[in-house]
Image (spheres, rainbow, N blue to C red):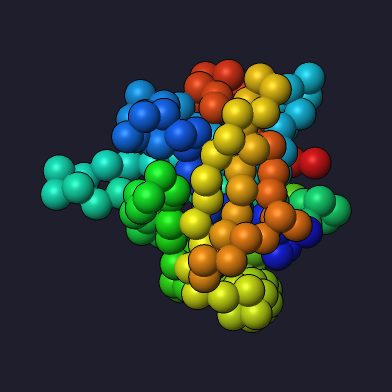
Length: 169
């Protein structure tokens, strides 16, 4: 679960829409990975901010474990390259972890950070995500260091922050 969720957190990207795969994000929408529309839940929620200098930042909230519920919140730089959104699989120094909705104590947070960093190191250095239409949403297709990783593919939908979606099992 951790490997899949982490890869998607940093690969989070938008559907391919002409030249701008992050068009809905520019309008304030969020990506809900592995959505359950009936329960309004996601394995991960991702948003983006766009700086005047062209840099893009991905803010991700990712379920690392369903029970007890462990969620990681982090921010990382991403770039759009060849129709995919790409980001590094490093830089978790500022990640925040919660357990059952409460902040993890510093020692536990460092332990989780170490586990997540190790999982990233085993996967690779960069993850890119391309999107293809699937049903009423999209299929997020993961590529790590240029190699397809179909085992990490997930369905994604765009949602409004006011739609009430949250990261939980």
